[in-house]
Amino acid sequence: MKTLVIVAHPNLEQSKVNRTWMNRLQQEENISVHNLYAHYPTFEIDVEKEQQLLLEHDRIILQFPFYWYSSPALLKQWQDWVLTYGWAYGSRGTKLRGKELMLVISTGGPETAYQAGGYNHFSMSELIKPFQATANLTGMRFLPSFTKHGVRLLTIEHIRESAEELVRHLKNNY
Ligand SMILES: Cc1cc2nc3c(=O)[nH]c(=O)nc-3n(C[C@H](O)[C@H](O)[C@H](O)COP(=O)(O)O)c2cc1C
Image (tube, rainbow, N blue to C red; front, side, top):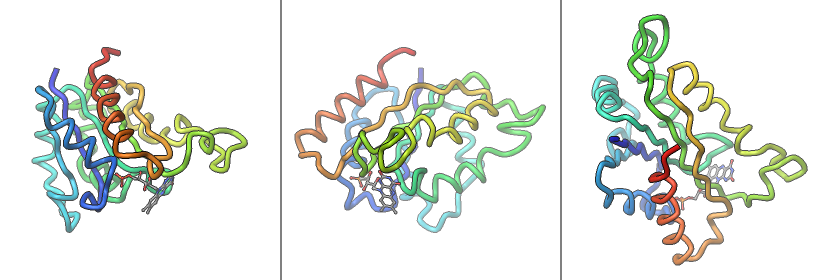
């Protein structure tokens, strides 16, 4: 099982959580880490290269900080450009069929905010539905996400622990 982790963070130098997670995952065998903003600072995504990377892996992980209840913009651009008709979907677009998709997300808001009655009103499962729908349309199995809430309040020690939790989450066979 080969895993590709696509990291989408526009400002990794100032990141605490996603940078720690990315560095930790880079130490794992059979996991390739792909830093999207480092490759495409001007959003000029190399579609063929990205499609080739997807073909070479069985499990695709999208790792990002939650921005306006979704992903940072470059990951949306990546979806728009890379997951094309006739390749990822449509009657002959079968290239992703049978692969797995998982989200790894950090949020500023606390866990209690992400529920009915909380200040964000909606749960993570509701807010990430577009990703689940994308997995569905492209024939990918949508795996349980790894989400860490309230990350601004985490100590360095907690962040390191969360990286180990993440590794354990990835090693679970769903
Ligand atoms: C443009 C922007 C939008 C954000 N939108 C949300 C949001 O919708 N929900 C939320 O809980 N946090 C939001 N945040 C907070 C980030 O999710 C948080 O800072 C990030 O997960 C921290 O991870 P890092 O240490 O890797 O940078 C936002 C931050 C920025 C800069």
